[in-house]
Length: 211
Image (tube, rainbow, N blue to C red; front, side):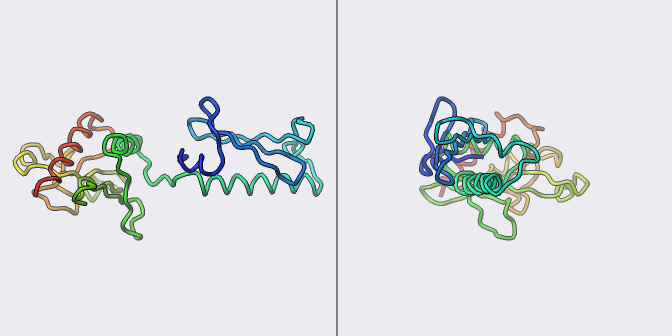
């Protein structure tokens, strides 16, 4: 997904719901890169007279100049992807909604601490640096659900008595790779509502404050 701050620092300007940047290429052409609110990228090229240049889009078009135009467009777009888009470490829609909720509610970003596990991320409080959430992707069989298909999960803090009441090894699990008395694991495949996930996350945030 695109990063708004990175886009603006790379010369993009806001135009309605889009981000737009214009730059000279090959001295005589202007390349316009347009990124909409969903992250879709489109390009337009204009010549020195302001007329659209489209020869590079014609199937079978050849020649050194056309080849240079195509190569330059590809180079610019590769730079934009590298400099202005964040890597999507998470795939499940509910996980993406959760990460956005954390950003909006606590202004926290995921921390990826393990090179061996690039899709494992922790979130921690700013005041005491204690973790209040961990997102990971694990094979379902790790939760005794069967199969090698991977599933994104969330670990949150919980009171032991509450955990004893709700764990069922179907939707609620004792903390995967965490203290099994103090951490709850839930699936991020929409088997629980966002409201419940967010409520448990916010309770975990409060529990992380306790000494």
